[in-house]
Structures are given as structure tokens and as C-alpha cells.
Length: 215
Length: 215
Image (cartoon, rainbow over all chains, first blue to last red; front, side, top):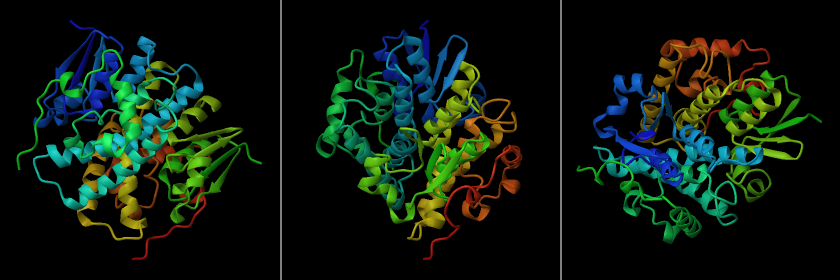
């Protein structure tokens, strides 16, 4: 049995943040499929057993069950002594970008992509436009930031990069953004992450097939 | 001059998270008005001087300028040795709820309230409905959680409570939720926070008048 179990599914950028971390730490881990699209994470049994928040990912390590990608990756950074802070300033700076990501970046790009291509019901155009405007604003902040430094929170990759990049490695047609064209600094940063030993794209690390909602 | 300066405005629940923390720590602090509604936080000067993310709050302490309410409160918890974790499990549990708050609770209740009563343009009804559905889901998680324990992340108040409560202490007509009626566990928890020495409601701690957008 692997040392770490990550309950995840291929479409979850939040789970992918942890999959990238486990892979790039060289962890002994396995992916356990969560049947998100049939509502598994929202069922009472899931909430009782794994996560009252009704969400994936969940990391199992020994008797521990951890939830929230930012918690899982902070825990793994301490465990492996990799991709974490080396001093207090870095600790605060990493947390700053992980929070920004949860609030403004993945926290909006995730739902935007979900209603656009994965939800059974076609999205309301006004909702799509609203979310896209917010994604644009968050991406502009990241694009400008990465014009000044190679990684989000330090001169080396940290869990802040895995957090902010969680949704960005999905195919351009899923995101409606082609960063090579629209955001060159983000695109160059993604190449630096792709170069990390162990890195793989989301559909090669987590269970589940690529699909688009049939409407 | 006060030891801590919090750049904030009365309508910002994110700033209020820090104002509550400063007040309940008995800090020597002053509130500095941010002219958010005239776009101050989105101007290049603000981004260069205070926060490239284009947001309030910002905490100044000596030479430090800290942004993101979750970073500011983690820093203050260490400084005052109050409302922070006492062991690793608590550290992870506090972070877990602060992230949930940023992602699903304040991260959606904030924009929902903003477009509903503060934005110059009347909101699209489909966007309001979409956001309200997400707020309802997040509030249901918190309501159930607070049926099992008195505070969000421990048996005592922590910065996770100030985070999750950031937007909840605004008037019911701003939120469109009257927690006393709709969410009794949340309402009882709010009373426990109100009882903390130093606690005050948002419009009594931060500069700015109550208003509603005239449309």
C-alpha cells in the first residue's frame, strides 16, 4: 500500500495542486478516484468519513485525513522539507499567494471552467461574463507579478506555485485561455514548473477521462 | 503614532477580520481610510506602494507592510500570542477554515453583497442567484459545523473565527441573511464572538458611512 492516498479526480484543479506536490516531492502515493460527477463528495457518508465541507481532495497519511489543498501542501512541505518556506518572511509570502489563489484565482477560475464545460446545464451568459471578468483581473495580477520574479513567492518553486497553477495546466479549450498568447509571463512560469522532476499534466496523474458536458 | 496602522474601509469584511483581531488583542492601532469606492486600491500608486493585488486591507507595522487578511491575522497571532494555534493539529485546522472562508464563504458572500447593494450598476439577477446558491452551500457547512463545537477551529476563539465571521456582522439587509432566523448555530456563535473584550461591529471600528448604491 502506498504511504499517501490522495482522494481526487482528474478534473479537479484543487486536487491537482496536491498531486503535483506529491509527484514533485517523489512521494510514495496513489490516487483514489472520487466519483464527483455523481455527487460522491456531497453525500452524507463522504462528509462524515472524509470532509464535512463536501469537497475533494482528501489526503490520507497514516491515521490522518487532511482536507483543503493549501493545508495538504503545507503539511507535505513540512514532511518532505521541500517547496516550503525557509524563513518567516517566506512563510507569510507563500500564505499570501495561496490565499489570493483560493480567493481570487482558483476560487473563480474553477467555477468558471466548471459551469462552462462540465456542468450538465448550459451556463447563463451573464454569470459566465461576471466570472470571466474576475478571472481576467486575477490573471492580470499574476502576469504582472511574474514579470518581476521567476516563481510566485520566492526565487525557487514553492507550494504557492502549485496553488496558483492548479487550474492553469488544463487544456486551453477548457479554460478559454491560451496563456502562450494572452499571458507570456504566466506561460514562461508554467514551463519552469513543467521542468520540475516528477511533474505531469493533470489527466496523466489523476483518475478520470477528459469529457465535455453534453447539452 | 499608533504601533499598527490598518488601511481599511468600513464596508470591507476582509479588513474587518483584521480590525476584530487588533481590537480583541488590545493592540495599539489606528484605522487609515482607504478610498475604495473611488478606486484607490486599483490605482498604480496603490499597487506599487501597498499591494500589487489591488486590495485592502494592508497592515503597517514598523517597516513591514502585510496584505491578505489571513496573513495579517497569522502575523498578529504570533506577535500577541493570542487567537493562534497551540499545536500542529490546531495550526492545520485553523488554516483549513481560513482557506474555506477565502474560497467559499467570504470569497463569495463578499462579492454577492457588493453587487447587491454597493456596486453602482444594478446586478444581473442570474449572477445574484448564482452567487446566493454558493453562499447558501457554504453557510450550510458552517451551520452544521457549529452545531458540533463552539468555535470554528478549536474549543476557543481563533483567527479562523475572525475570518469566517468577517462578513457576517454586517446588517442583515446588507447580507440578505438574518442568521437569527435562518442559521441558529451561526447566530449563537456570533454572540460568543460579540462577547469578546474589545469586539465592536464593523461600522464602529473602521472609517466610512453606511450607504446603499443609488441606481
